[in-house]
Length: 203
Image 1 (cartoon, rainbow, N blue to C red):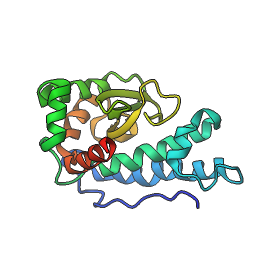
Image 2 (tube, rainbow, N blue to C red; image 1 turned 180 degrees about the horizontal axis):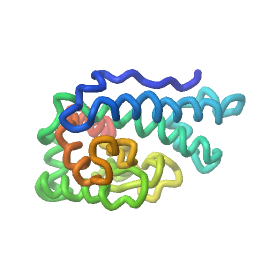
Image 3 (cartoon, rainbow, N blue to C red; image 1 turned 60 degrees about the vertical axis):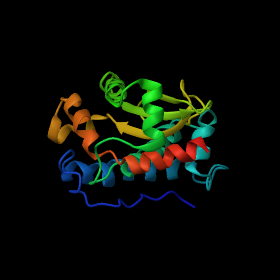
Image 4 (tube, rainbow, N blue to C red; image 1 turned 180 degrees about the vertical axis):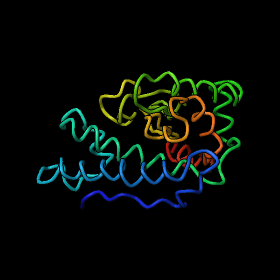
C-alpha cells in the first residue's frame, strides 16, 4: 500500500502562538505531501513497495537517495505533527521528567541542550530526543531528512521528540531567526505524546 499524507489532529491555525497557519498549511500539504509522493514513486515496482516507512529507514543504506530524502521526510514530519499540540507547552511529568533530570540535570538544562542542537545544525536538519539501544536518553541532530532510526545514523535510537529546523518550518514568521522559532516551539510540545513514545521505547 502506498504511503499517504496523514491528517493533522488540529487545524492549521491551532498552533498560531508559535507557528503561523500559512506556514503549517504549506509545510503539511506541499512539503510533506511532496515527500509522500516522491517516496511512493521511488519504491514503486520494487521489492520495497508495501514495506513500512520504519523498514525503509532501517535499510536505508541499501536504497536510493530519493528514498533516504523523501522517506525520511515522511517519517520525520509524521512524528513532528504528532509531538505538537495547541495544548502543549510546560514540561513533562512522571518517569520522563525523572529521566530527563537524571540524564541532563534540571529540565531547563535539557531544554537548552536540545535547543542548541537545533540552533547549531548547519543548513537544514532536525534535533532529536531519543531513547538509545541501551535505554538511555540522548540528544542528537541529523542533516536534511535523516533520522536516528536510519541504519546510517551516527547516533541511533527511537525518536520521542523531533524538531524541524529547515527554513520552510519557520521562515514566513521568523525569517532567519531560527532561535526565536526554537524558543516558540517549546510552547506547543505535546509532552503527553512524547511521554507515550518514551514509554513505548522503554518497553
